[in-house]
Image (cartoon, rainbow, N blue to C red):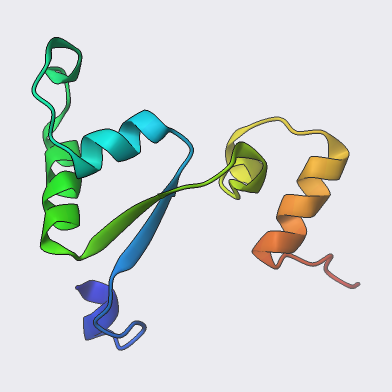
Amino acid sequence: MLLIEMQLMENEKMELRVGSKSVIDLAKHPIAHGRSKHIETRFHFLRDQVNKGKLEVVHCKTEEQVADLLTKPLKTSNFEYLKNKLGMAKASN
């Protein structure tokens, strides 16, 4: 809602890319079983947003997960690939 109010985004569905198919299943299909009892309130909020059509949870292969650039040690080739995908460039002096 903040992005819409700041006119940085039109009123459309936001896409959330995750690497776990289990997370996608839980977001789309509220299954009440023992393994999902520990889910925190914030995840129920995300499920609610999916049900309202404001959020779409889609699978993203690990190799394409741009956030890994900031959170994991990567091989140089993977680092360069994700850096370029993010649009980062070497600063000139």
